[in-house]
Length: 110
Image 1 (cartoon, rainbow, N blue to C red):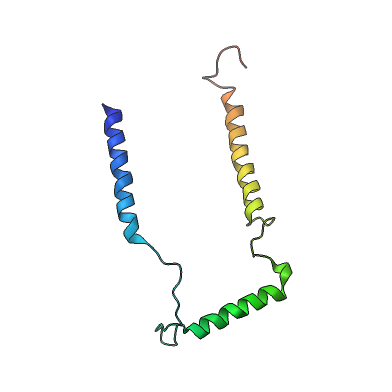
Image 2: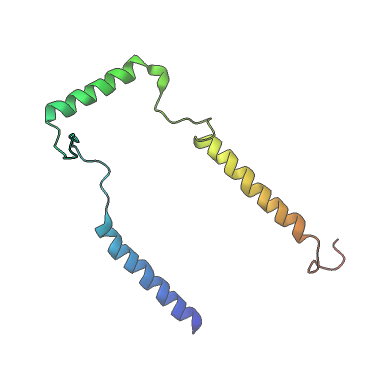
């Protein structure tokens, strides 16, 4: 009986979150210039194309800069993976060592 209620409540929660999540969509960017008094305007097509042309020229002028994703940095992909593996590996090792001894360890195993 308890598992049926828990399953039903979980399904209701999932569908409720899914229903309300669609109305809380955040847009990543808007095309606007912020003025001195905080007002926002909008890019013209020519301004947007000029900005993109400058970005492409900058990327072509500096091919060694790459995509900007620092893979071997501690804040990058590989660095973050190694740090997470070290932390969780250390925790699992500590639990393994502590679990092999103590009050509730199986008799005859340590």
